[in-house]
Image (cartoon, rainbow, N blue to C red; front, side, top):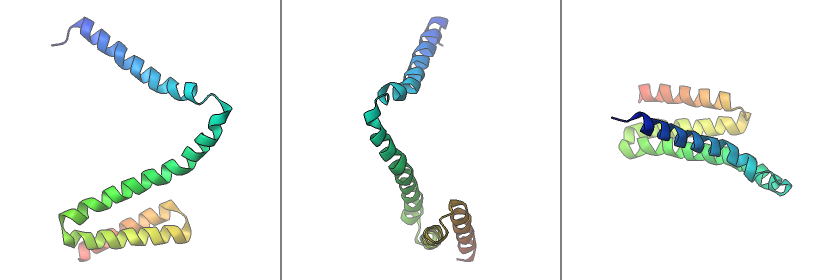
Length: 107
């Protein structure tokens, strides 16, 4: 059981941490010299995050079962090809999902 004092202390500490996390970027990136760093982060962070998520999503089924791996790999390749062709994330994701669903039911 947590006392009222402990709950207030925990609430204050969590509020201070959240406040610091919100204020820190504004304090850190006040200088004009950080504009090049921010532009680099803007350009590289989303593709890196998407790549990590894609490899994480693909590695699970490949390790588990060889029969699940074939539709996953084909749908992933299809998604990548459609995205390189059309440059539209919505079309490539919907198309890749449809290919995966069809292949997973057929195979």
